Image (tube, rainbow, N blue to C red; front, side, top):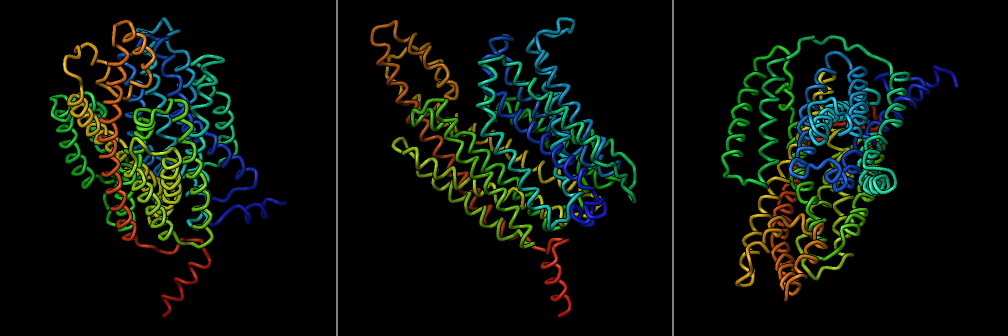
Length: 545
């Protein structure tokens, strides 16, 4: 097949790629996205070994916090820069930073020349890794939008989105195998060969295109005020489960975040080339998709994270088994992603898929609302499959709809904004639901504690999320005292009842949010996808009439 034929086959009026360029670009992007998605699931399995090796239990939450902060902040910033200067070199820089910082994370604790101990090194390097991941997250779906017309993007957006499900399925197992057979350090080192191959593929095959007709002005004040808003906001939401909403630390951070958000909005209204053009949100499609993404992030991801806790703490499922029970949801999400993408490309329409997907999620949440201590595992799996299918249907739709509505010069910014709002929504959801859960759990647990129980015996029960991990130690400790095991079993029954009540409450709130999401998806305005012959013909006939 000649170059001309390859271009005709693999292009749609956007960036023209030859067949080798197409294969190399898609393969490189998928490998990068898979690496970044795996990184968020594979490391969790190695957590106990990392803590033991680096002696950093008290600082381990900062490993996740540093990554969250840097990755979330970088998504909108580098998406905007790529709109101004082009995608290729920013994406390559992000992938290179991610791979290099993976090597540094794996070597944490061995670099004695640095003025930090092993845990301090890991925290810093995870923050750096988050920068690389944020750049890749912010640009990968935008590059897909550059290469394909909106009518074709659906199937590729669905394929790329399915990488998240695949990473969630295989990540924990791979992380456990690497940790047990090699070392926890290989959970980071495994990124190197695949990452280098992906970088080479993008470098060689993805052409550089210099954007035309844009003003090359960097909104430094917008960057500064956005960082000044997001850092305290994310820190407050991370710490709220430990310190509570009324603590001075959390209240101060939220106040600073609110003030800086107002300042950021004022700056953006006056900037000659704003970091996040507020005019984008005048478009009803972009506005509704952003709000819907936020609600989905808050209601779906904010609740799903507590499902393993329900299975372990209420249904008495082992930690290993609870992880495998999440697999049906991820498989359903992958299936939904691929199906939704294919249907969007075939029909040139997206609204019906968004509504159906939201209905699936809402139905799955209603299933969760009806779970209690006597619930069968198959009933839990039913709810997961419904939520997974719905999530798979909805995810590609929002991206395709936003890209179809956004002006060409703001493609990166618009795409990143939909990811950004979903990410912020999930962070808010985890914080709010976690706070509600712990408040209700502590109140109910205290009411059920047998009279005369020593205070020291109750200390480990303050955080129910840690109980499945330390139960063997608790049984050994309580077993040293007469009647200790009976007391321990009584306390665990109290835990089960208290957790069931608290988690049921957040499932109810999640169901309400997702029902609101269904209504919101009805408000999405559908316009024909550019590049889809049937849709454009229909649109033209309507205009002619």
